[in-house]
Image: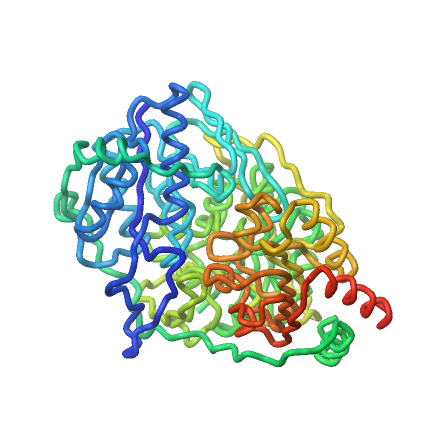
Amino acid sequence: MKVLVPVKRVIDYNVKVRVKADQTGVDLANVKMSMNPFCEIAVEEAVRLKEKGMATEIVIVSIGPAQAQETIRTALAMGGDRGVLVTTDSDPEPLAVAKLLAAVIGEEQPGLVLMGKQAIDGDNNAVGQMLSALLGWPQATYASALEVSGATAKVTREVDGGLQVLDVDLPAVITADLRLNEPRYASLPNIMKAKKKEIVSKTVADYGVDIAPRLKVLKVTEPAKRSAGIKVETAADLVSKLNTAGVL
Amino acid sequence: MAVLVVADNDNAHLRDGTHKTVTAALKLSGDVDVLVLGHGAKAVADAAAKISGVRKVLLADSAALGHGVAEAQADAVLALAGHYDAILVPATSGGKNFAPRVAAKLDVAPISEIVEVVSADTFVRPIYAGNALETVQSSDAKKVITVRPTAFAAAEEGGSAPVETTSGADADKTRFVSEEMVKSDRPELAAAKIVVSGGRAMGSAEEFQKVIEPLADKLGAAVGASRAAVDAGYAPNDYQVGQTGKVVAPALYIAIGISGAIQHLAGMKDSKIIVAINKDSDAPIFQVADFGLVADYKSAVPELMDALAAAGK
């Protein structure tokens, strides 16, 4: 079974996000970029499926600027087999990303799409669900455990208040939550090997997908700053302050 | 314009997120209907009918809807979508699971987790885990929106809307197998009014349980943890508060032995009152805390327990 894993290049999760003074967006100049953490988990799960003999090939897909090639290389170093990079200078919205991925999937015909549940920049938590809807494939989001057997997959999902288990027909779109696994660090030999793996470069025009934005960003602002409060001397002092604030 | 709110429910109870989403919907239009998706969920529909400002309640019933299967939920909403200009869904894990499907099928951009309605086509939503707020204007004729419940006040009760039955929906390629809800007396982390979180300073899983959990139970609070504590194995991953964990906004957040890494602050800085207990007076957590106690948690937490007991808690 071929497994397709879309990955996104985003600001590193440890970097402090700064809003641009002109309110047009977030400052990404000279900022460390990394693979979206949830995408890393999806890549790891695909590699584990291959190690178990369930997956035969892992195709990594990224949509973004030319530098997204580095993100694909990282995934290839973790164990992906080859990459597809769809370059675009714009920052496509989830609907456009889902349509582009659907087009790539039309060519690649994978038996399973594994992807992160959400990107930590836009925080939309939408592409997996939208892709599943466009393809007419079953969806299982927020996976914390995955068991593939033959033509179906059993997915344990993180839902409000507990866990839910779904059984889906393959092909399906499965999105990864934090507890699915702990991604490996690529070893140096694997990083070297990844440099020789193939990455095919495509453009949005190759797929004929309209990626015009539907949402116009009027402004991006900083949330109201919290100011540091007061230091209390004792626990009793703290309790009386909290009582006054009415939160106990 | 007419707005459809999809209710948050567990087949037996209507959840509060519905009332909050109705508040957001009423900012768009006076014509607000509520759709209840469930199985044997008549009581939920009756409860939704009591929300003030609701025009009518629609009840869709099927086994798949009762189990929250996204394909069925989206189809049930799509069957009604023609009558509405906007579809609002509470941004719970269940709501976020099916709302984007509805948007994809309608060929519109989903507007995720709004925290403010600016006008009928303009909304504010957090990005980068709440480190920035984006104001977006939608050009789509029909809007599919998820609403962050903590950002809106709950609509009052006192209405008496009629309840109508509408068609259910099923999913043929996705089957519900089982469900395991955490049977804890503690509230759920994302919805709790008080959260007590522990950090790496705990030093071990045993210490985490010994220190954090009794305090949480005394306050009727949910338990959270920093990523550092989770990575060190002191707390399970579903306790994680932060950019890669859960984003919480309780009335009271108590951070114990948490230094306040950026990625943790991203997950809790919208809390109403933040308390930090840390022995390092330079810890970044104090920069966002309303009340800081510079002390070793080993002495401070027992003292806090005593002070709470003395205050009758």
